[in-house]
Image (tube, rainbow, N blue to C red; front, side):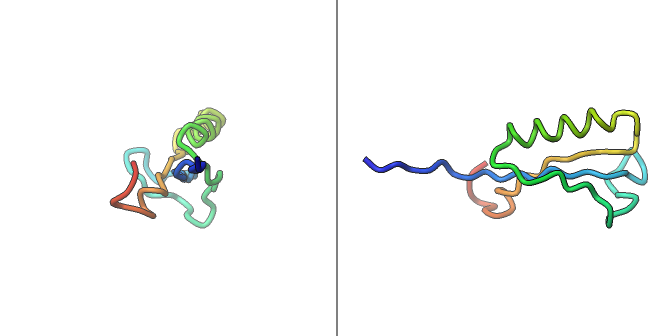
Length: 78
């Protein structure tokens, strides 16, 4: 038998202060908070949740999870 490594489903977590809470334009793109790249959605979501909860007092601060694996292989895995 051969061991098959699970497919990497990379996710990026980042955030920053928005210009307006109704959109997704950042106030200062040069100072975005790059939290990190994670090997699966669950670990990315945990990091996102921690950062989002830590910044709850700033209504303009938003964090996002980006599915990098969908960008790397647009016709591939979800």
